[in-house]
Length: 602
Image 1 (cartoon, helix red, strand yellow):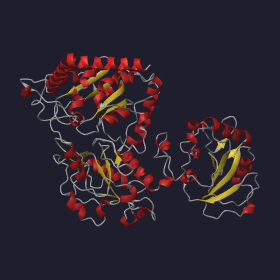
Image 2: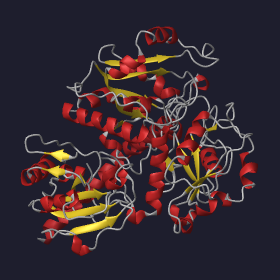
Image 3: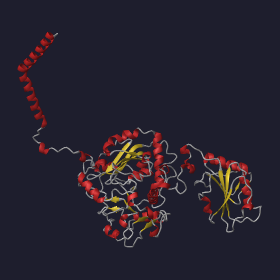
């Protein structure tokens, strides 16, 4: 065994010596060649004309917005810190809640002086606030303050730019470095970079701004508002364009855009690339270079054809016949096309990276818009083609709801802004997000009434429940009770016999006091008398004494010929259709029922 191990060791050692003496030179030469080859590859390629070649872009340049004028990351950070010195402001740190405790949510507008230049749009905002239920002319009662200085257009090249705002606001005794102030803005910055510089220090004020960058937006403090034109109506506004006969939801064009094309500068990259998805059939992308003073100076080879094709389509007709509308960024992130698409029930396809969408605190845009990526433009057509028709119809219906609830007028935009701020201040009584995104919307489903979804009859279907079969008989009395034969006493007895009546409320709107408890008829259900003013509208108030979803509103002279059948109709109609019985006289042969326009009222 020892001899065997000895021979194995000698053989291994001899093999190693032979490899070293006869193969060592080749191994050393191979290593030398490898190092030489690596040295050559390290500097490859050595172009003789490398001085004429354009260098590769760095990652920061690839992620920039494009254009001729670019800022370094350091310059952008410095610019942002200069504009937003209070970028960490939140309601808890930059808002005085104590001003809202005594008088509630009241808004004071600085008196507008004659010499103050105020644009038409800013005047609409001020008027909307002064006509709202939150306005107060007493600054001592105010919880929120609005400047009388027009801050909407902060492009210093604009004729509506107001100079020396810093000096003016520092002279306001209520300014308090912007605390509890709300500043509105539509346009910020100017050529070439269009930064968010407002030209004055907003301090600790809340900023309600269009084209808000996500990186500059202070969550839970600032509010992103839509960009609207000076023609946007102050009140009312037009209805949406989606009608009952607009089904199936797909229209002539699947995807469309018609608008300006920027030849240079920020925002030009996205719009210049839109022609790549145009096929002239179901995808229409029309742009024009013919805008601005120097467009011919920067004119490219596509401009003449683009300008010619642009005139072939009417914009309103294109909106009406398109299922999806491309909303690319402009010089700033926002665009007028956004509200136009919402009204037309054309589902917005947003190509504006970094845009904080309007009222994002309250509105769930995933139910009404497609948020795309500017860098993935070519994927947009295939993406929208994959969306099922049922979802398309749901998106279109949601655009109509959002347009009519929050965006159709300046008044609604302002009221939505105020209600969001109010929810932040009184967060214990704030609306759940469901109320903002479901009919009738956050401006009508008030938290003063209730924050519990079950208290709103029009939310029963969404939650898979049904309203109670009981109702409250609500009788408004304007005449004194002088005898036992008066109609109101007979009406109370007739209504109380219904198995669907849960309670009877008598709203006493008479100058004389109501009769004592013993003079009222005996009823099988609770009878309550509450005092009211001599106004007909008092019957529609959501009194706390009402404990049912349905209210049967009656006058004191109402005559029910066959009470039980009439009450049965009222209860059945309410459960099945959410309707009730208005009017003065009813019979089983001619029962009049209608859907109530407000909760708990006919």
